[in-house]
Length: 373
Ligand code: GMT
Image 1 (spheres, rainbow, N blue to C red):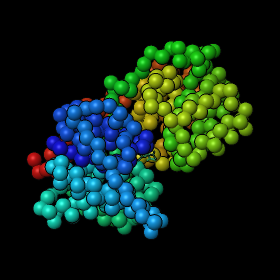
Image 2 (tube, helix red, strand yellow):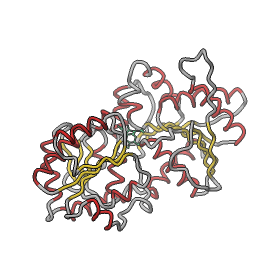
Image 3 (cartoon, protein in one colour):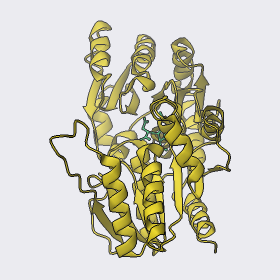
Image 4 (tube, rainbow, N blue to C red):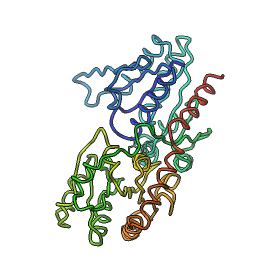
């Protein structure tokens, strides 16, 4: 198949899922055309089946806001027509689903029928999409897509409860490439961070409010009072400064390190003992899956689709959003030498179910369905 993928090129979850899906499709012999405003971070290599088309954004002094959606639709029309794409798969509803609808209508006038598959990722539904500024367009473009998928059953239910959606939504969970995300031998790294065999806690996110990074700091503070431990904070975003202030306030600066955005996050995860994800809302929790694939158990909130991934008492524990006391208690239980190995094994076994080799055929099947095959 000749597939167009539209996504955000940034390190955010939806961009990572879209890019990794495109790479896997290309390895399976499909031609994959990425259409984005800059090259996705994880596309830094050559593959004869991968093509990159940058959206040309033309500005004009009249525009206080550049009409990106129009530029994107125009690019989609152009790429579908000239590269003879079979279908468009857009990731994150805003503004990709409505831009795809517009492209589809334009192509129709040229005698070209292009199926549109929309994958809902999370905040496009739970946070941004339901805002009255966007809701009517999001509802319309979801209803107009040929196929709609969501990354968890919880996100599917949220979509039905927040929007008047009249069509089926297929659930296809996030996935992981276990050939990349697996525990690597990085003993020297562990020794450097934890010279006295401290337990290593890890958090990865975009440090947005929804991630409740303040809870990560609170939970670590409680763990640290009980056992020798270190915390690595990976990623960057608006709440990072607040987290750094909390670190100083709790006098934890010697034991907490902020690493910023990392390309090879699996190297750090490989030496972790526990991953903390206390999010307010989380449609799936790809960051937790990446940790689990590296044999790191997860202490998380029970928000959104996280319980579909993190199994209470098996791969880690779930607590109510904001219940840092319970999270710390569970963390200490998991980190206890009598328990840690069992939870690490549980995390890996669960992660294996989400290997790309199990998930890719689900997308391919949907593509064939969209093409009427
Ligand atoms: O976490 C974010 O805010 C980034 C966001 C995105 O769309 O880029 O991530 C969402 O999509 C990921 C991939 O499907 C999911 O694993 C994340 O759980 C989801 N984030 C939220 O729902 C907050």
